[in-house]
Length: 328
Image (spheres, rainbow, N blue to C red):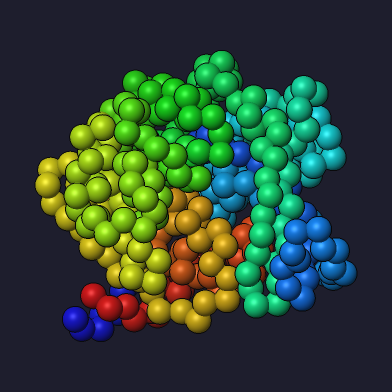
């Protein structure tokens, strides 16, 4: 293993070429966060501090990160007709994300997560997905125009699984590249994944997806093969500080390194990776270069706290890559 400096900025599209287009089939949940000295015991009340409201939800995170990387991003999903839903819409407007595929409903409130973080960086989280639960195949049909306009369509599982899979089917039939991030993880052993070009779990999620215990010692190649037997063409498993590995449908394996950073907060790194990977694919990059771009983007986000505030723009990522040394 030797050190190698990665030069990437020269691969960027010229300003005269069309922008990459990414459609996120997503979720939003307002994060209500408080810091406490320690995690309370059942029935115990503690005094906390530093209460804050943060933008949450994997779909929202992915849309923001992709937009900051220069893509033309569309978001399809459901929020409540309330203050949190309006805050989300304001965020999307500020980031330049197209929300013509967003449905606003009075039937459920916007999703919300209650988060207690202690001073040792541990947390407990409870989430009510609220209006996200109403995201239906009909919403996908109503948003066909933005799906058809996109190069890459990205879904995750904070929305109903049937809706995510239907979105992959519609996008695949429209000739788009489809990416499914199966998080939060679900057992997919009875699910048809034949409309998924890339499935992108981390190591724990990959095991849950194939019906194993999260700490199963079955090797990643075998797990990837099981997902491919369900129809997924390519399997990317993210390995945290050890990088990522892709098992291609043709039998090849790509192993990509991690970028060395001083980690502050890894929350939202998976969403950052997926968004950047989709931007790379939408720009016509090879799979390995898109993965490397994603690794740099997600590593950089770990150098700051929270999710949306930690997501860097394209110039920052390219500068980071141009000066980074990774284990190649």
